[in-house]
Structures are given as structure tokens and as C-alpha cells.
Length: 86
Image 1 (spheres, rainbow, N blue to C red):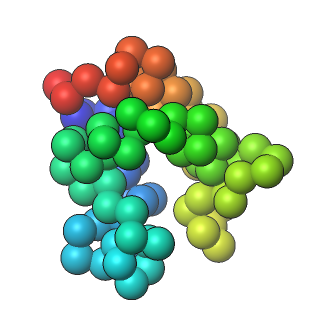
Image 2 (cartoon, rainbow, N blue to C red; image 1 turned 30 degrees about the vertical axis):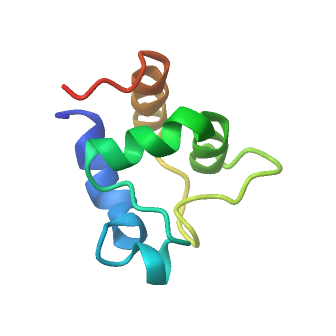
């Protein structure tokens, strides 16, 4: 929560928060661990591909620059660890 949550707050929730997900985030809300966990349980590759701007994935944040390498590494490690709610 102290490492990944601030990244999500600053870079993802502008479109993927509960209040705006249906308008700006293609109906995908990542706000709150249960929402993000539910998405990641079946879409880890899509999530990581998007934030890493990998070919074949819609780059996120939409219209924004890629996250700094340190943030990407922290998110990838968190996902690899099973995205714990800690």
C-alpha cells in the first residue's frame, strides 16, 4: 500500500476510480484492492502490457507518458507476489 497505492492514485485513478470508471476508464475501476484484485486475477498480462507500453496493448495511462522504470518494477514485483493487500 505504501509503494503501489501512490502510483495508482497519481497515474491511474484519474480514469479508473469508482466515480469516473464508466465515463473515462472503459468501465474498469481499480480503486480499492478488491476491484483491482478481481481485474488482475484474469488480466495480469493485459495490465502489465498496458502500463509497460508493450506492443499489442493499449498504452496506459492513456495519452500519458510511460511510468518511470522504478514504478514499473515495483508494480511488476507486487503483481508477481500475488498483489497482496498490505
